[in-house]
Image (cartoon, rainbow, N blue to C red; front, top):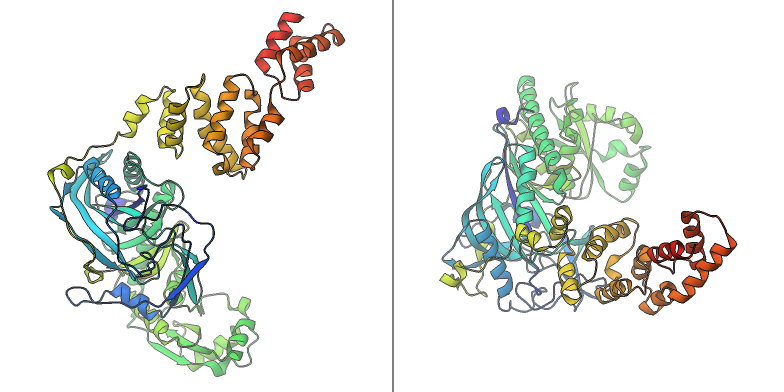
Length: 597
């Protein structure tokens, strides 16, 4: 695609958790809980902004009429997250890290830091808001395609992730309140590959400070538009390498919607708003799920979309236009079945023929059904979206869905922000403006006594701090071995299903010392790590893998030579290593074979 001709603009919002030891407004540790014995329930309501406005995204969530269940563990959650206690003092370490990131991105600090309440009533915050503050503005980062402007950097509380979805959505509270830095770029990105480069560049720079690592600790919201289209925000994308495909799919989607707009204009489309209760037409249906719904006293609503025939088959990004439209009633818990589909697979062909007659649908019209109770609002919003097809592309928030996205809710506005009265303003001092910068990854890399490629990998690794801690405690003969444990052995263990977090740092350090001292064979390192990751203790490891004495090894070598006269060195090595069952150092065996032959 010719992105320049299309007028592609992309802006990023990167959200990175900060490893500030405790959460932003309480002293709960930053940790992941495995069990959640505590539970509370809430229904959330929107409130007006300080200017008396109501946010469209908040109203959308409110009218979905959902309830929320929150699960918590006292080891990672307190009354602050449960909205039963006011926030405690701001985490100073998190603020310092936000200031450092601002300097690294060449931003201007604000004069005073004011925390605001950002309304969030999708259930991801018990209180119905997140605390957020503007830290700095007007920065930049250098890229291969020129300077990319940094609009704002904010410091806020992270949200709660969903455990399950249904009538009552369940959330876990161990993540709620973790400090999060939000970095918003200018929409100066004009190709999918530039979007990936920018995200990677900023993400790499963020690793100069102590950030949380692992799945979900960094997320990208990608804002995308084309010249004749509209800005959409795709939230929660985590796969850096697939950002180009996400952008490409969104461009294809918007291009398709523009083609549909032109097609509807040529067809003379004037709007679609016909909907009626057609349950009687489906009383004798052979479609099992429709029959069951009617038995449960649900209604079948018939819809007519004037001049829409065959349009829902059209590819729209990574899915059909039908699936694109389906997401709108689905956001209220309803689905659609339409006449552009293969109705034979549902056993609904006869009923849809009757539906056409009932709705006075012409050959160029599409008919559809929605099944459920109280579906009026979902149908109303569906028709709003269908009618907007003749206008253009709506600005909206979408959620990442594989390599594409689906509709989530309207774009939020300024009406979702109002002052936080429980957190005092912070005057930015000269000392804060001159906060000491952390070492960059390049500087950290130069300090490592390792090959260049290995040191480059290590400073980006989640185990970098563990490597530094271990090499400070103990200077091994082979620093390279420790680096390879973290970068190679651990990666292989995870790929094969082992939990490397079960390998204690003290146990690993003892293993390295024993290998250095010649008490454990380096050749058995992989199996030793497998056993540690499986939960075996050090006593078991030492008994299983401890090297036999040099005297005993010498006797085994002599015996092997006597019983196998004339055999080559490599054959003798194999015989001896087999007899010792891995409890001998290969280098030592080789030396003895050469000496005693």
